[in-house]
Length: 322
Ligand code: ATP
Ligand code: MG
Ligand code: MG
Image 1 (cartoon, rainbow, N blue to C red):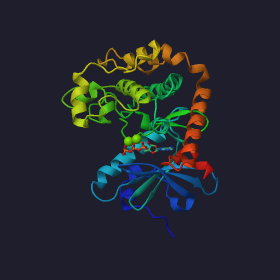
Image 2 (spheres, rainbow, N blue to C red):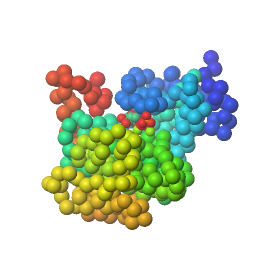
Image 3 (cartoon, rainbow, N blue to C red):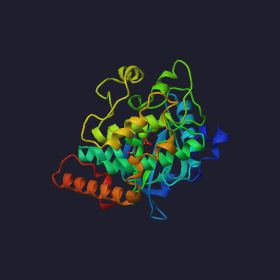
Image 4 (tube, helix red, strand yellow):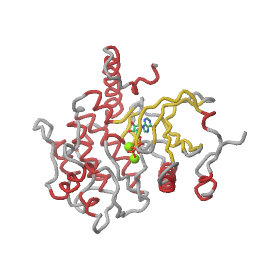
């Protein structure tokens, strides 16, 4: 039988080159849901021939707004297939079935946000430092290619089993730099991105602001203003002073790094390369693998305990053990 290729795929010849025509249902087995969003769901899966574990993001483009959804998928795939960096998620292939695109990528254990959720408390400073360093390395690479990520937050920073931090979710990435459209997740958005609604442009260092907000998220469990609704937060971000860490016990280096990332004026905010030279980043860099591996071991241990007590399970970190 011919593989099912959706009419929208064949009607869009320019995009067709990004998609493999084989039937993915035959190529992957043991699909298990590990995440979801507005687009559909993300699955853990095994490639039938190689037995390799992969992650599959299934994105629907059927129903309402099907053309818009299709354009978003093509945009994400176009960005992702161009990236080759230690700290960006590796792309494998993309397939089409009826009304669904299957974006196949390397498998990660979970996001930095999942880790915070498992521990229900702040990460350690050295862990936050390494997560920031690897994310900055990814951002330096992206910005040099003239991309802006536009959705930097703990939920989009993934961890691999061997201790590498990967920036993921290029569904909001902009191909043009500077950009002027209103894209991102409200609480993490830089003031100039919010203000670009009315006028103006912004560039890659809006991602550095979002990383500063991510630091607070990793240290406190939630970004600032999270108790407000998104519209109110969008009003307050440009109006308020830049947020800071609430607990006075964090080190001077960490406070200074957060303050640097959360410089309100984008012209005065450092770019990724300069931010990477901050003491908070350099002081833990030599031990980065060990720090993230320890974090993963610590996280798996907590998840294992949860399972024993039959508590609400966050099994994703132990997928290989089930
Ligand atoms: P939405 O646009 O609705 O916010 P999304 O674009 O954020 O969805 P992703 O961030 O790409 O979707 O994926 C959603 C979740 O799925 C992630 O937060 C993560 O937990 C999980 N996930 C995504 N990619 C992978 C991967 N390669 N390995 C493991 N888990 C992943
Ligand atoms: Mg996401
Ligand atoms: Mg997204």
